[in-house]
Image 1 (cartoon, rainbow, N blue to C red):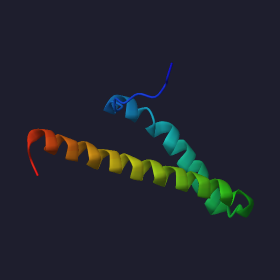
Image 2 (tube, rainbow, N blue to C red):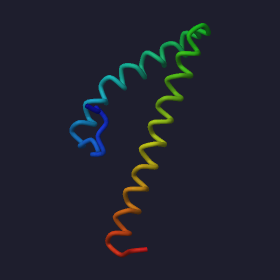
Image 3 (spheres, rainbow, N blue to C red):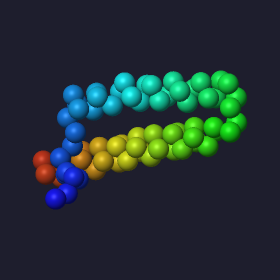
Length: 75
């Protein structure tokens, strides 16, 4: 049984990600403000992961909209 679904997450489901994302973002900002150089790798990984997720989401959104226009007969 696969846990991966082709259906997009609904907006209320996506809103569940906001509080943990804010918490982790605040923790990463504290690391930067303190100048904890030994933890900068963790900050780098967090920024890379968030950037990848945002770009992947944007690409999926563009692909989804292109698919809609193709189905609707648009250009």
